[in-house]
Image (cartoon, rainbow, N blue to C red; front, side):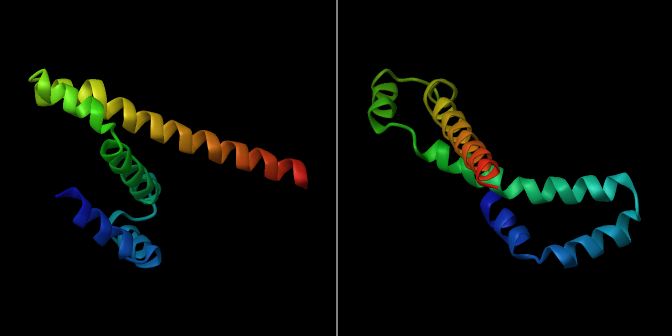
Length: 104
């Protein structure tokens, strides 16, 4: 339910979105904060959804066999995989940025 709205927001050109937000909120800190939040929202959403889907099927089957609740499955299997994937992506980007600085 959240992904179609996020994809729609992603497909709107940022220039058009910035002009609408500036007209709505003026040249205030609120409009600037909203623009930055919207720019960072989509990559975080995509990485989190990919991490939630990347949970190990064996562990999910074990949770089903043990009759675990939705919350137990989420907190003990899906959430660790989502956070692990997110941290790995950040770490690899940091390494690439660091290597790029050395080459200059």
